[in-house]
Image (cartoon, rainbow, N blue to C red; front, top):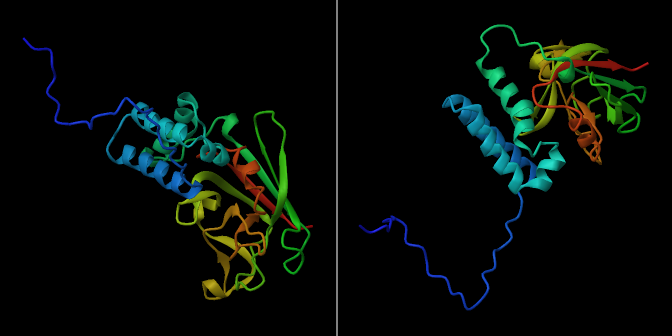
Length: 246
């Protein structure tokens, strides 16, 4: 009996007289990486794939795009991917009761201290993030104000429940911290965007601009500093954000 396996594939012949050179494949951009990882996670939930299977897919994606993954603070080892990304994602979408309470290592506190004023410098404040893991806090330049051209007057000072997601902003394509579950947050005055009612919704903390704040009402981190914040957080981590201006 022949031991040959009939394959439906017919590989092209290889010329062994010349060395076979593999072409370097460029890594995905951060936006492309987030889109692909989000698709893997969503398909896993929708099709009831095991967490191990989804973890393996994400591991291969991260391994093939190590620089991009590192820039996003995305883990590149399977145990951490499963613990920090896959499990929280599945939990978010399958829970039928109240949101699960995270362990102490998942809780965070962010304080945005901004005395710069709306008409002051672009990033006249600071954002400080700390986790309940005993590690050092991180402080970066930030702003609590919308760009001057925007109609939103800005949100009120206060403390808001929040969650960090690797796709928490910009139509679920880039990282962000979502305040008050994307629901309403009080503003310091009438908001023309909301028929002059004194609230705003879908307020996030996200990467800002370099020649403008890049904010229509959100809290923003100066471009180039956002990774210091994202690297302190893991997908699905919950905590609180405090905005103070005095």
